[in-house]
Amino acid sequence: MDYQVIDRINELLDSTDPATVNTSMRIPAALRDAAALAASELDLAPSTTVLTANALRSALEAAVMQAVLDRHYEEYPQARPTLADLAIAAAELDGHPLAGQPGLIRQSAAEVQRRHPQARPEDVLLWAEARTSAAA
Image (cartoon, rainbow, N blue to C red):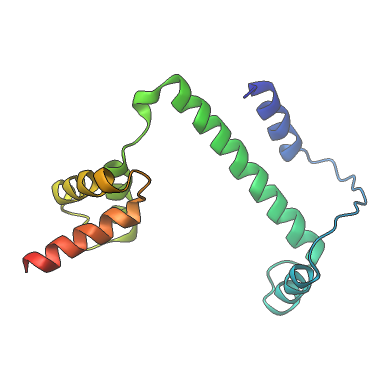
């Protein structure tokens, strides 16, 4: 990944230039209709065009953040959080009942990861809940 590309994308996203362009995008009709309903009935945006532009901006911002984070982890692999770290953070953010038991979450993460290397933090929390239910 080239940081110049990231810088250029950020520069374009930060632009206050009011110029617009017409585009010809082919999207599924059902998606267009859903966007129109969301804009008009849910007040999600003033128009489907604004809703589409906002969604594209959000996707680009997320992609830039992920690219920078991936590059950081390539340079500093020790900085990457473990599955247990992610599960503990998720529990704390969600107010999960087991948030105050990081030891249990770490043990559960180790157990889950042995059998399911691609496990997610939610999987760890579910396993930790199952362990506490079985012990009760």
